[in-house]
Length: 255
Image (cartoon, rainbow, N blue to C red; front, side, top):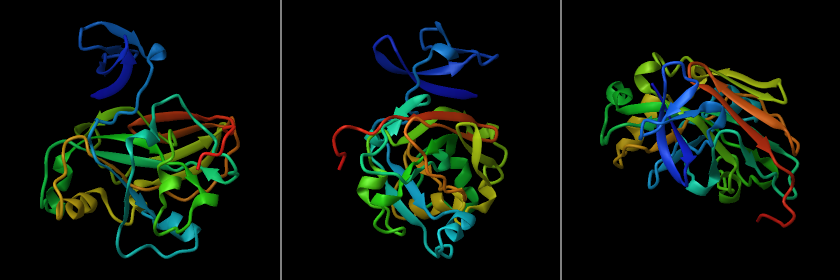
């Protein structure tokens, strides 16, 4: 089953897809055509958002490093997210912004001190993120700094959440990014350094993970710098395609 968070009649609501997936079923039972939906990022208010740096071996080597021996985890604020078919402002003064297609695991039930072999049972669903990186502003590859990874509307997510039971093996999914129709990333979740199960076990060893918490699991190789106006599509096998457009440069400096 797929669930989406949309804006309708002045409020943010969750909706399910009908059987043919051409309409969304609102809580009232009314239908909205998917082509007319105003998509919101599928994030729960108050949830914790984790993200991984250098979590794909091929991408790590592409940047000139060896895969890390410990996970490089950072947090993201909620204002950094934007929904499917949304617009990301092109950062003032930047010319090296590139998309990063990522599988997102969403916690479905509280967990603490979970064993790795049991961890995937605590995942409620999966979605897609495009976690843009701005290389001019990146001060340290191993410690992604605040103004790179928490800029407003620079992390599109969605379009929807696919139930975990509908993804047979999250560690064997193809990830593809297209810019204006040209493939610039083509990888597999099998190349993760730290698996989803390992990450859940690790995080839950020192904190309680709650329903709605999200883990952005990193990106494969393929650094492609984008221009204002570019259309970016991040596709993950068995989940869908997340679409975003880079807007023009803002008139004022963004930080």
